[in-house]
Image (cartoon, rainbow, N blue to C red; front, side):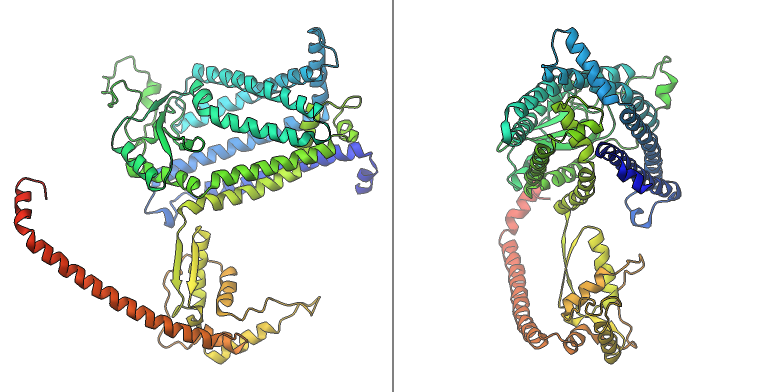
Length: 580
């Protein structure tokens, strides 16, 4: 079978490789989704770690919602993969290109008008995608989201919104695509540089105009009224030198109950946008800015409206909103937005460079049914969507992991632990758990960590470890760490964290050894230096603590003296309610 595949023409090998890789990725993701659905089904009680912050009703609602979303994702993914496979096997891409050519010929444009034919092809392709995806979007919105109380759209609003999105997308996509194709055709040998610069300029322009000109076409934006929340947001922005100019509230409640917050803008013109669903019991779209009085329920109220579930709490209070915004502003403070843009543009430049190398390969076009022509738009589609698929999947694996680290970083705390007196295994378990939670942990004075068991027993065990070698290559063995910090690091790296390890202690009757002494015996050369530095540190710490006690004592004495001197004024202020 393998020999038969490799005996095929190069064009067939490329086609089947693309098809096989696509199904391999789909099956792997389907398997991962299946494992996740098993967790959704089996975990019916609130985990112990979430018991204090989530009640059982909220957890059950979230579990059922994620289970329905996972089932929907499986069937929609299966349909999408099957549809893509049939399009490739039946020659759907060259067929649609031929239809686009026939339409352009009827309009009076010949085959030399490739850009015009490309725009017609792009319009037909996006229209086909919108039509085939419409039933799935309807089911997701009016069945799943409606079932769990998140949908706020009517059917008419949904259709108007979908049509508006389609036409706005075409108004942006068609001119940008035509200019990109024109640049590629006239750019010469260095067209990939000009194409990359063009896409960079387009992305910057879209980021600049989206919130002011595109987003208002779909949602209503109003300024956040003066009040405690706005003052708190401005104070938080000022504390980190965030150049805030305006705070908007967007009417997201007409579409969904989900909430969000984000900021946008360049340089000194930053703006914050809050979804009205994020605000607690408040909607800025009342004319008065006050909560609307409840209307008496009429007899004509539909049973569907009566049965619609209501959340126990709408939105977040001010501290919770500030916490959400603090996370987003943390990305700005740490430069994550700029870094992400730089990485994205580096990736874009790399892709265009490889595209310049591959665009002249005729076998790529023949593999997908284009035997007599090599349209530039089709080349972009084949190379970026199919040929780059292994690279894109690799990027999909790496980027979420990097984003997880980036998202944890704004709220990550550095934990400083003193290792002296702790047990090696238990401390390693606790540190490993904190690392898994996204915290950065620094452990000092590792030479004072205790190891269960007497010294000679531990020394013999470690010497035995140092003698270990690979069976297949005796010249190689494990990394022979001898520094206490590296020995602890290796222990932590291999640690599986049980939930019960919460108490760090050493029984009085238990023999133990110090990690510093063990490390010294197996080759660590800095025990004496570390001991000298530790003595100096203790002396400095003693002086600092003594000075701190003196300052605290003098401060309390000064406060008492001042209170005694202003006592007569304090009594008068209390009488008038100035002081409580």
